[in-house]
Image: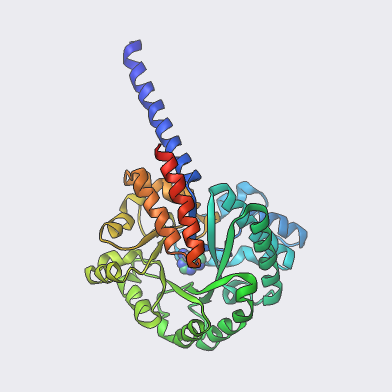
Amino acid sequence: MIGKSAQPVTKISECMTRKAELRSFIERMPKAELHIHFDSIDSEVLLKVADRNNLSLPFQTIQEAVEWHNFRDLDEFLHKWSLTVEVMLTEEDYYDAAYHLGKDMERQNIVRREAMFTYQAVHAHRVPLEVMMSGLEQARRAIRKDFNRELCFIADIDRTSSPESGIELVESIIPYADRVGIVGIGYDCQELGYPANRHRRAFELARANGFFLSAHCGEEYDSGPAGVWDIIQQMNPDRIDHGNQSIRDANLVRHLSESQIPLTLCPLSNVCINVYDDISEHPAIKLRDEGVFVTINSDDPPFMYDLVENFYKLATAFELSRTEIYDLARNGINASYAAYNQKQKYLKELDDWFFDELE
Ligand code: ADE
Ligand code: ZN
């Protein structure tokens, strides 16, 4: 009897040890994160800010917050996403939210993070741009000093906004680019029914002013590969945010593989938004195997999962080796908007760490 039950127990504990080792490997690995929304703010920060501003949130405790952040689909998500930031009013509020992103970089060993914000959609009606920018600028400096990590920003145009409003957004961001570390202009919110040609002039203005360009597209089933083609043709993007639906079009997969436009995939976000029932259905590894430049990211952690969990679940579902995980992390650094020298520094840090791990 003892002999019979002892073996499974040993096997279970071996399996748990392997899982813990894998998670620890991913946590300790130096990483870049290129697709995360600043506007999805950590619940503890929100509770503190709401209290300070005498405003109420749809939840009062962390437990209630976890419950409240559930949603069924992209529509409900985008609705909820616009609600909690309502408590953000002052420079200090923006500082706290951005500084939290830096602390979180330390926790997950993220050496560089490029966080998007959608000013038109969720801040403009309440807060002057200068107030928001001052908070972000100071937090970015404090994160450099306290954690030696680089938090940059991408200013997203709301797809549903008018062409004039898109141009205004880019014009208003230009004076803050260097001060706040805004390295790119992005494109997000509702994709279906809002093709990219409406904002071509805003994209051109962004390019002329030295910003990198990226866009959310091909995220939901209905947007499909056509949504990705639309962005490629109208924007000529430096990166594609999501783009998971590309797998359904062999010509598009070939084009992505040849052009090496990086995809900032967010596997668990797609599962949470109900694009896939399970991470094992996610096309990240198939796309990689076809030669597409894929990177792994989180999207909106308070509503979903963080970067470590995305790597971990993907690695578990697809039985990725340590080398495959490291290669994906290398892609993240290579696809970042960091200057050449800075990129080499991050790559060296990752390579040195990885080769030490192998010994
Ligand atoms: N804004 C925040 N997260 C988003 C997502 N996954 N798709 C479109 N817009 C978003
Ligand atoms: Zn996103």
